[in-house]
Length: 160
Image (tube, rainbow, N blue to C red; front, side, top):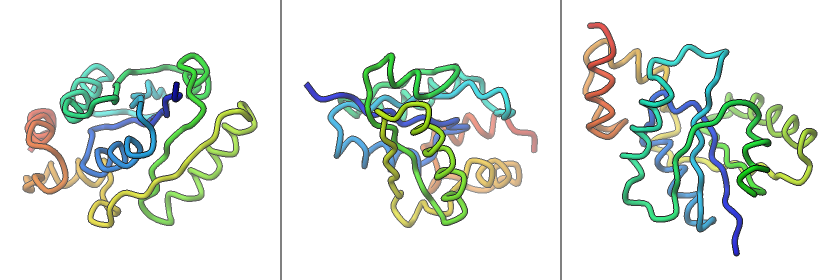
């Protein structure tokens, strides 16, 4: 039996870049757990429940992909779910330093759990949730960045 991989993140909101990473991870691992973090240091636009709901809809056609939320250390979630791999997305070189530090910290906390970095398709490499929200406030068409239901949720949440 193959062990699942975990793709943790804030996903505020889910973008086509995230979905691309999920697809890529699922091509490697038969089971992928997309784990939405309760991050007390970030001020997300969407609640954890809303982020989980949007992600579940975004991956509803993917067999073997599960969406859940978690609080605490991702390595503890990995141990609980018997996962030996964490998936992290790298968009740009600017992501690397933070992701590298996080991977090394996780390795120190849980040497038996490996981090694998995946790059999204180049058409999504510049996409960030922060930039997306700033663009949405200005009334931009977001259809090339997020699924239509995410765009609708963003426009409903953000002031104009």
